Image 1 (tube, rainbow, N blue to C red):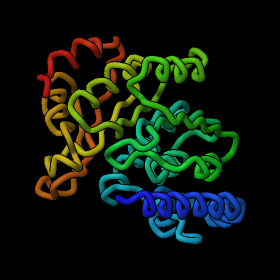
Image 2 (cartoon, helix red, strand yellow):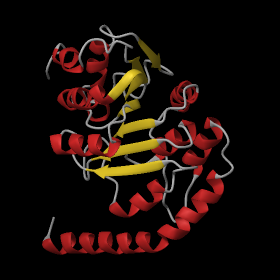
Image 3 (cartoon, rainbow, N blue to C red):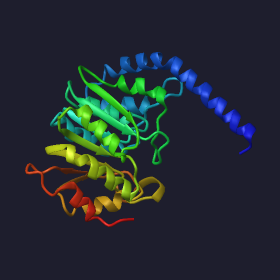
Image 4 (tube, one colour):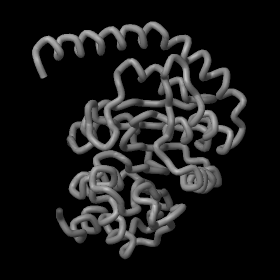
Amino acid sequence: MSPLRTAVRGARTAIKAVVHHAIAPFVIRAFRARAATCDDAASALALAEGFEYGRIRITPIQVRSEILALLETMAASRPRVLLEIGTANGGTLFLFTRVAAPDARLISVDLPGGPFGGGYPAWKASLYRAFARGSQSIELVRADSHDPATASRVASWLGGKSVDFLFIDGDHSLSGVRADFELYSPLVAPGGMIAFHDIVPGPESDVGGVPRFWQELKTRRASVEFVADWKQGGYGIGMIKVANDGGEPAAAAANAIGTA
């Protein structure tokens, strides 16, 4: 790309960011007004899929039946501490606030400019924090989830509390999903849930090594799968429950799964 085109693209990006920062309060106001009418997972999903203000969307990258099944499972226990790896459009984070406890803590980690759909612009942080309802709190961590400093930051924000629900949907490479599991699953309380997105085989650019990791992990842990169609070429959610006695250490389970 020529220097001129690079400069023009950079200028357009900068102007777009300024415009989005300016309209962010109006986006938040409009979103909160509509979110106030959401009283169940289905209505929340409809909002997340259909909301648009000035071309700003929060569409979750999910199959409807799969994410609804997961949300219904979560709603039964109303988790109070949730950790999401991979924020992307923010739609799934919003849905989690609707099924979490009214005083829940939610943390979402995302790598700026990351692959597999990661890297939301900084101006969106105010919108994502506006997803909180009741006395919920949302912490957004824009950093590499594989960095030990990031894991330490997450643990510090938890303040000694254990995670009730962990959703891994970040780096989809085999080494990436393994690293996220090793780093963050020890934070999950006995009886807590760990879910993975994109367990259905599909294009490498979309699912990476997640299907392979999941197929091997589920042979070592009791699991449940939310899959609309195993031939859909991606998507799908797999979930395991942490044993009340802690079960096999995460590092041992992850290390037993082959490398890329």
